[in-house]
Length: 424
Image (cartoon, rainbow, N blue to C red; front, side):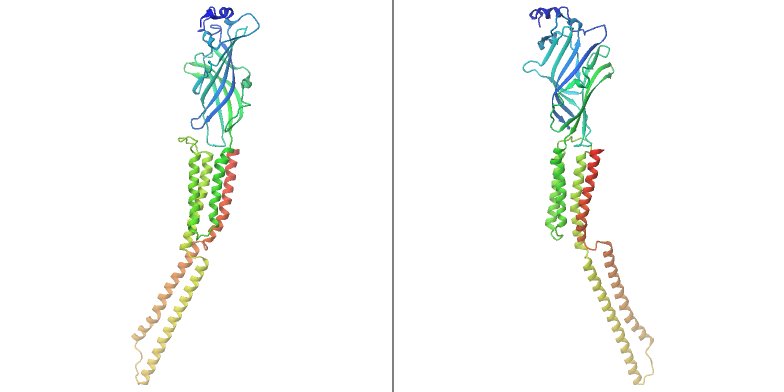
């Protein structure tokens, strides 16, 4: 800008002015006051761990070379900032920033009679924010906006908030999509680098995520799927297609819901989030309901129930008694034939008695069938009793137990889950 086109007052101020030297050069540091006006916070991204905000940054400092007579301030064109010294302020964690330039660059320069300069900018910046997602979506995030001087250390420039915590405005009317602004405050510190200590101003703000969206989008559908999987407990075990259809459908639907819940989060995130824990619990209950029917159906096919086991035992007892009666009758008939033979021999005048060999041949015929049948029948009875003791007497009781244990367990785990993540 050529000085000849400026008004006489400005020409007088700019005469001999060196913009490359800071105010009070060689006479102590220059003090710069900061204030912010948050116009909007457009995007808060968990995937990129950052937020995008549009801010009005206002800086005030005193330049003794710009004092003039009068009681009114001078508002200059923003393009005249090229003639003045301005602080080299930058946003520390900024990933991408730009100065708005429609219709012209959004700068404001105002000079007061005592040499105070007001310099305002409209900036949109994307700032990194480290997030802890272990309690997602019941999490709180604390993000910061840090302002530092790039080249001037604390011996040259001092930063301060002009009105303390009231230096940041616009947050009371700020509307965010998924968050609620809970608290904010300002602080002052120094940034320590290898090249020296530099002034730093920090604006802290705490955001709480609104959980209502996630309750309607994830928690209610997943809980409804768990309840739907319990319907199979009231369906007859003989209805195999119906129960298998409910189990497989709920498992697949729950898998789809779990995949959809992860699409809005970082893929390489090592956090075990609260929503992952809940979806895992729901999937375990749904999968458990499917396994329950498999176990009950297996017991129905491979184990007789209590009535059948009792009838089977009675039948085996009757068969054993019958076999014992047959063996007894066989033994008694053999003895009768032996006596008749003796009588016939005695009538014929024979004095010989039955040889011991004959008696030995008869005895095994009466004892061997009895011992073999008794042993086999007793072994069968013991096997039946063992099966009845090791397995459920009636497989239908499994469904009756599941109708009570599954809902009570789910309610108990829900109480533990919500208590832990909401209050701890």
